[in-house]
Image (cartoon, rainbow, N blue to C red; front, top):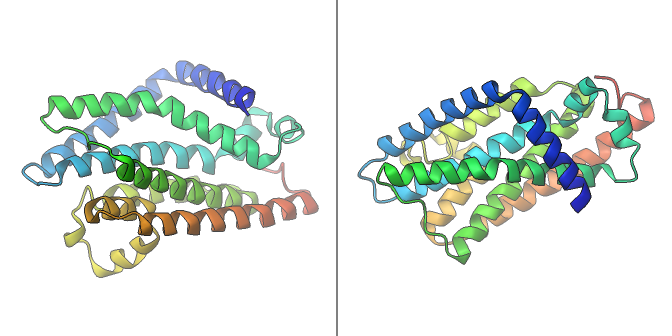
Length: 241
């Protein structure tokens, strides 16, 4: 696993170097949103939690985008067949790629946390419970990403759906627009929103809701991926993108 993560990591760095301008513009847009979160919540006692929520979203958005398009991008690069022919199980490759994406995004998260300090807002002081809740949030997002990747095996291109979901998670997870201002229908959807439940658990001093949502999406993602991957191999459509 370590060797696989290392290989993905250095390739990811090479891609970022090649498309540095695109990455820089994307980061600038996220800084705009982050600044809006900081100043929109100014004066709120839970402002550090809103900052933590955005940083969790930042990791989540990169993870979802990478996971949902993993097989599609490998197909365009011409490496999908060779990747799936390796001795590693597909789920191990997905896990290694996901770890790499989190590692590559982590320095930018740290930079945003430092930026929040200059804006007068300390990042959330993490205790063991808060760290566990945020971990559950990431696991839940990974389950959603695996679900989207599974859907790409059947419907191939899910990029537009992923982008729409990413902005939903940004706007309606309780740190950009306050939870009390969200309509009832959004609260129903947020019952399975890992970011919303993570922020809710941090506010409430618990961890159970985020843990249950993480387990839910993990079960859905693993189950759907196993079924659709086996079906794609059987009907010969696995490499057709």
